[in-house]
Length: 66
Image (cartoon, rainbow, N blue to C red; front, side):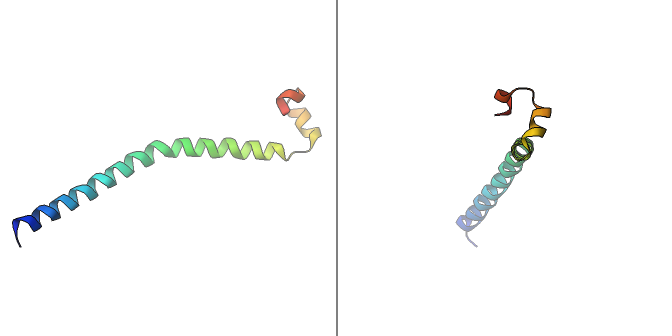
């Protein structure tokens, strides 16, 4: 094994470790945002499919219902 092979192996290992760490950080930062967006989207879709009479009971004005 030559010095250049060891260098390349070290370089590859360093890149992989750095990429994994970046993924972990990005994943942690995006989970709460994705969850919140999904929750709001689900509620909005459920509300959109309610009968008009039920919407009137939940939201006081037509402008807000739309």
